[in-house]
Length: 88
Image 1 (spheres, rainbow, N blue to C red):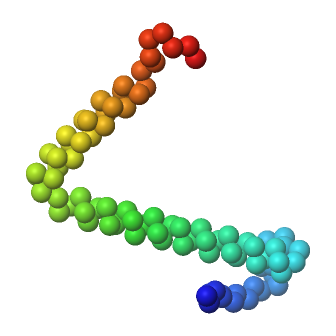
Image 2 (spheres, one colour; image 1 turned 45 degrees about the vertical axis):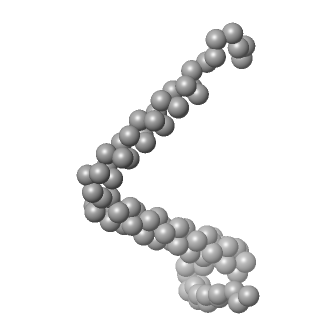
Image 3 (cartoon, rainbow, N blue to C red; image 1 turned 180 degrees about the vertical axis):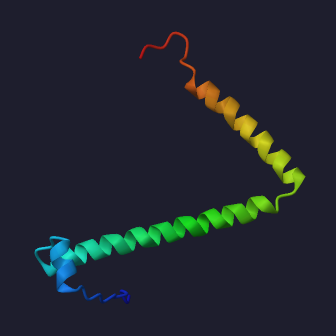
């Protein structure tokens, strides 16, 4: 398995401004920022996919989904109600 590698050179002034004492701490910071960026991209793509899906649903699909949500709501309410005679 090949692990992708990214090489980033930080100017010394930025390195000092970020108060990073070692290249390892800089690497951890850059890794964190890149991972956060990737997560935000994935969320954006997922949001766009949902928007595209919901934009083309038929009225029948919407009605079916509303019925399923009603069924789940009833089940959720049953689970959330405390049972008579149970303690705790």
